[in-house]
Length: 141
Image (tube, rainbow, N blue to C red; front, side, top):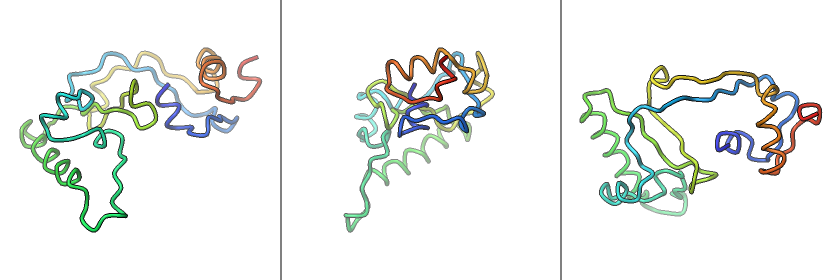
């Protein structure tokens, strides 16, 4: 659900979008969680590291969070000998429940199912009925 909201922020899916691939992922490998407040506190970060809501245009000096993030990225890379674990962070559109992943070997996450967006009828029904999306009418007929 989170991926659909991030990919289609206007909540409109058109016929042209039907050829996009949809993939359900299996169990996720161990990761560094930037979703837990206790981890953010220890690292001296706040939720802006996950949501990307950093405003630097109105400031003379860049936000100190950017410097902390750069130091953290270097430390993680060095600590795990140039093979860092995936980073799990909160999504921008649904930070309370959504999670995103960055910097991981895609082969480490098995796919459960793969198909075209136009063929995901159960997802279409959910999007229309529960998330106020618009999809082509023949997709839910």
